[in-house]
Length: 82
Length: 146
Image (cartoon, rainbow over all chains, first blue to last red; front, side, top):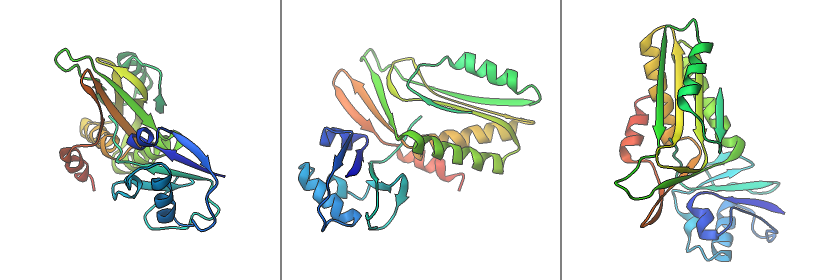
């Protein structure tokens, strides 16, 4: 089971803050996972927008990395506090 | 000290304690950010973080501040959860021997919190809610330090 975290507006779009999913065997990269989750939650490509950053096991990834062995994937819309 | 918490805090009290603990610093600079009240429109903010990832990012930013300025101490308190008009969102305080380092480090840390820290902020008004992203000016301000 892979833990998926949706932050900010993505949590509202999915109506989930987090979920645990059984990812199909042919989904093994970040981009494939995004496409699969976009469809699963009817997100109209929201996860694939260039402004959405991805963390694998709490580390930021900049390319279409493999999700093999990952425990937790976080999808992060543009950040900002203060 | 870095605190990310959903418990309200008293910025004045925290700042006094910071000053007490920084007896040898000749200069203390601080910034307090509060929830604005917008013309009677009942407003609250909702802030989310990514647990340890948020705190680790802030910790890394304080390390960059210590490397760049001769600071003796840093305090950062940042709220998450639901906040109402007038409540403190953030307190940054820096202590140093002289004022320039304290001012600049405080400014640097606020720019980091505004544009890079792992928070998401939703503004809630009578007319609806919006997730707030940094303004162009916030990103321009943050680039001053690179």
